Image (cartoon, rainbow, N blue to C red; front, side):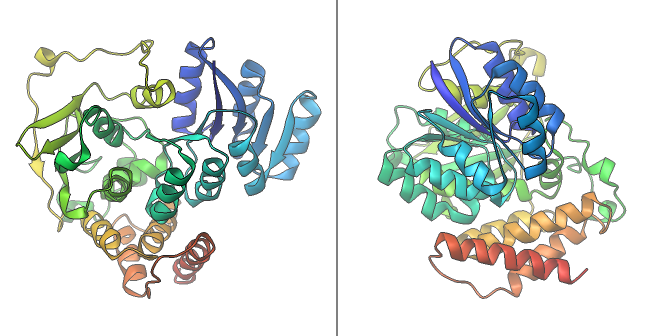
Amino acid sequence: MKKINLLGATGSIGIQTIDILRSYKEEFQLKAVSAGRNIEGIRKVINEFKPELVSVQDKESAELLRSEFINTKFVYGNEGLTEVACYSDSEMVVNAVMGSVGLGPTLAAIESGKHIAIANKETLVTAGHLVMAAAEKYGVQMLPVDSEHSAIFQCLQGENSKNIERLILTASGGSFRNRTREELVDVSVEDALAHPNWAMGAKITIDCATMMNKGLEVIEAHWLFNLPYENIDVLIHPQSIIHSMVEFHDSSVMAQLGTPDMRVPIQLALSYPDRLPLMGAKRLNLAEVATLNFKEVDFKRYPCLRMAYEAGKTGGTMPTVMNAANEVAVSMFLNRKIPFLEIESIVETAMAEHNVLANPDLETIQAVDAESRIRVLEKF
C-alpha cells in the first residue's frame, strides 16, 4: 500500500485525487492532508479516510475541527502545510495547492525523500532551478500531473532524452479561442469561466483563456525535461484529444491521446510505474471524434504566452514576478475589479519595471514574490 500526503484536498485536482483514492483504498492510504478554508469539504475527507494529520488555513478552523475529531492531529497555516508535506513515512506528496504557497512545502518534502506528484505550477515556474536540483540531490522523482506534461512523460518512457528534437504542448485555446481581441473588451467573468473541454478551478480556467496557463506549462516543461525554450512549441488543438507530443531527431513524432479527464494523469502519477484501470473513464473513440484540428499560436492574439517565453528565457526572478502579477491580476478580474484584457497589461508592466536578480535562493524568491504582489495592488 502506497502512503500519500495530499496538499490541497478540496480544490479541483485534490477532489479528483480523492476520487481515485476512494476507488483504490487497497492500493493507497491517505496519511496526511491539507485544505484551505473549505471546512465542510475537509470534514468529509476526514470522516471517510481517517488521515492522521490535517492542516487548514487558520488556527480557529484547526481548533474547531480538533474538537470534533479527537483522534486526528490538526495544524494550520504555512507551517502546517509543510508539516503535512513531510509527514510520516509516506512515499509520495501530491501537490495540488494553488499559488506560490506550494513551493516551500514541496522543497521540504523533497528533502525528506518523498516523491512529488506535481500539479502546482508555481513551484516550478518560480523556482525550477531549486526544485530540480533538490530532486536530483535527494533521488526524488518529479511526476507531472498536468495532462500536457504527463503526456510528454509517457511519450519518453524507454527513450533517450538526447534524441529529443522538440516538445509540442497542445492547447485548447480556452474559452475565447474563437474570438478576436476586439471581441474580448467587454467579456464577463462567467464567459471566461466557460471552458469548452476541461472542468478546472477558476484561476486556471482564466489562465487558459489568456493562454498564461500554457506559458506556465512551457516553463514547467523546460525544467521537467531539461530542454531549451527554443525546443518547446505550443500548438492549438481545440479537441484536447492529443495532450502533447514529442518529436525526435529522426523526425518521428510520438503523441499521447485520450479523452479530456484529469483523473488519467493524476492516477498515473499515483500508480507509476504501474497503471490501474480508471473507474468510469470514457474510452477514446477516434471514429466518433472523426476530425482533429490544429493551428499555430499567434503571440499577438495571446501576449501572455509571449511574456511567459520571455520570462523563462530571461530567468532569475523574472518568472516569479510574472507569476505573482498574473495571480493578483486574475484575482482582481474574478472579483470584477478590472476588465479581462487588463490582466495582460498588469503582467507586462510588472515585468517591464522589474530588475532581474540571477540565481535567486528561496528567500529571495519569496521576497520578490511578496513585493511584486504589493506593487500591483498599490496601483489599484
